Image 1: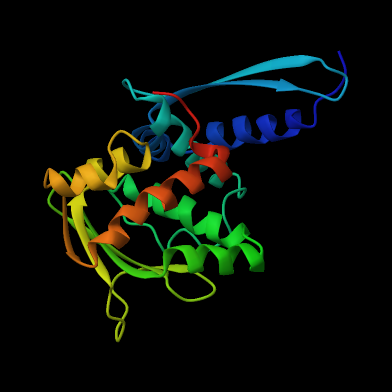
Image 2 (image 1 turned 180 degrees about the vertical axis):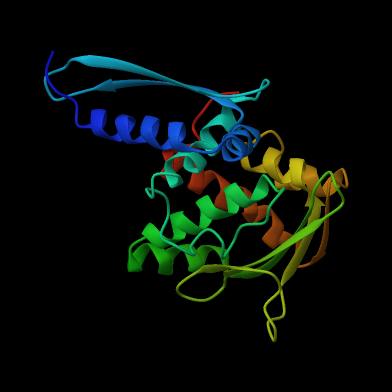
Amino acid sequence: MSTFKSDEIFARLNETLNSFPAGERQELVKQVNSIFEFHLKNPAGDVKVWNAEVKKQGLGPLMVAMKLDLIFRSLGMGPAPGKESELHYDGFETSYLILQIAEYLNVMTDAEKKDFVARTRGMYLIKVKNASGQVATWTMDMKNVPPTIKKGKVDGVKPDLTVECKDKDFMDLFMGKITAQKAFMTGRFKVKGAIMLGVKLDAIMKETQEKMGFFKSKL
């Protein structure tokens, strides 16, 4: 069988995980809680399968995909330093989605950014409550070029639309389980401001899913 460039990565992964003190290993299991199976094909067409178990109980495939970054960050292979902390809130699954939207905006060309803003034209304030009652807030500037997302409420910026929802409901919107219109009508999303901008959230979520293959796991 021909060589695989990924062998070195998995060797480093094993070495790093095995070097963790017991407390750190338990914390990683708590955060990741998943079993991964990687099927890798090299240029010669050979296939190698790797398995990684970082698990203590069941977890759906979407969340498994979103937790991969926790493992690879342990090898120093994650997002640029500070990038995730700029948007992340502990205890919120929505944080992973917001990061993906931000990365999608970042990889757009200048022309794509202008087109995206022209189609959206809105300043969003997103407030999400988790199961513990904590609230995370993001400001999504889809009104100016380049479009950006900031953690928290930006001083001096008046949102065109404020959206309040539960962590799970934002996840459901992203995954297409509900539409923005249905979320508003059923009260799962509480909105204040230009409600038509809320409907455009569907387009933002869909475009991110299509461009960022990270979230294409089927439930």
